[in-house]
Structure formats: structure tokens, C-alpha cells
Length: 183
Image: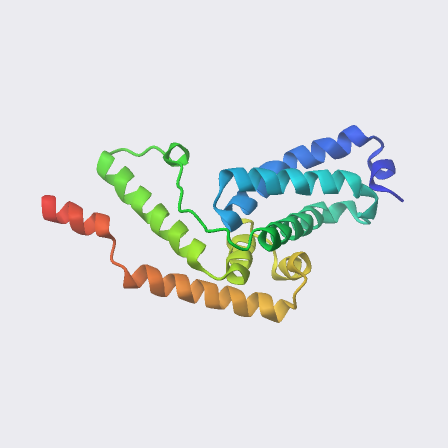
């Protein structure tokens, strides 16, 4: 049975894709750190999902199915652009407003440091940590999406968390140091 016949109309399937688009974009951005590239990857993934809608057997697995397509599109981009360099770009308009400029500055610095360190992780670790910690996917779901054993998911996640913890502890927050010197 095709997904379109299951949902009755293609419009419903398109609505489901539209609902999942923001999550897909956030995940793609976490992987590639480029707004434009994330847009391209998500667009390609959604186009593939529309073309291959009949391959989805279980409508309850839609999110994992879409993430798998997104992951494959991401890796297609990596193969095409082996010379691609990650750019550390933070859109400060997306950061939350705070009660004071000092608090806002400190939080911005923390976000920048974490994003920078996540971007420096090896691709496999970055993919796993974003799926598990950002998208809250189960280990089994991540294993299916990335087409790797669940043990590999757990070891990559452990290594990624450990590396992030070490890097974030190793570099004292420059903002706090500079702020204390000026005060």
C-alpha cells in the first residue's frame, strides 16, 4: 500500500512534509553549518521524499525515513564538495533575549563555543550527537537513519560527548575572563 493511498490524498502527505521541514533544516544546519547548504540539502531531501513516497511502508516511521533521506543527501553533498570548509556562522537574531546585556553576552559566548566545538567533531560523531541530543532520536532510530550498528551509535555518542566536555573545560570562557578584567 502506498503512503498516498494510506493518507488518502497527496496534500496530506505534503502537509506532513511541511511539518517536518523545520526539524530537518535544523538537523541539516547542525551538520553543515551553512544556511544555504542546509536549505539545499533539505530541499533535495523533500523532493526525494515526494518522488519516493511509495517506499515508506509504515507511516509511523515517517520521521526516521525523512532523516535517512536527509542523511543520504548530506553525504551526497560531502562527496561532491570534498573541499568544503565549515564556516563558524552564528545568527545572533536567533538567540533568546535576556534580562541584561552581560547575561546575553555570556550566553552568546557559550552558544558560540558549543557550536564551534560541535563543528570540529568528526562528521560521524557530529551526526550522532545532533540526532540524539538535538533531535532526541532513540539510539535504534539513529542506527537505522545512519545505517550503522547501534553499538557504533553509542560509541560515537560517548566519544563525541567526551570530546565536547574536554574541549569546553579546556578552554576557559574568554568572555567571563575579559568581563572580570574590565569590572
